[in-house]
Length: 121
Image (cartoon, rainbow, N blue to C red; front, side, top):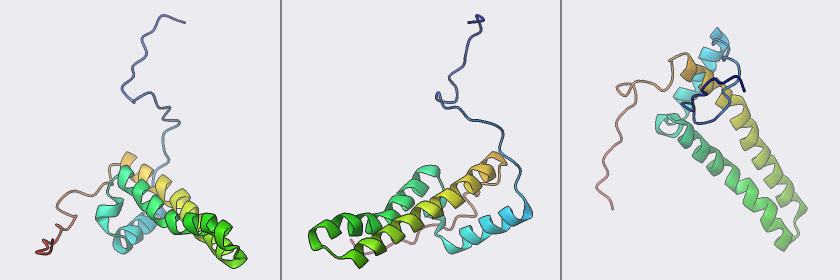
């Protein structure tokens, strides 16, 4: 110990090296994702995790439900769905993290359209 005081302002996480700046291709991918996915689903890290769980759940249930049904193709489809969710998360999360570090994400509240009111319970 060198006697220095270590700050726990980052929550104890090792933030690693500074993220690389966004390239034009990364900005285009971020814009594409923002257009294709509802902004409420990708606005925060927590919501992106929930989106991942929602995308991975059908594959997970197909794989573990196959044990009861003994259907190889259902199990194979489950692995493919789960792998697609994992690959989606692997490719998009670093992009969102770099955009957040650059101050480009999350979008300002005025850019996120307000939720429509529903009169149904």
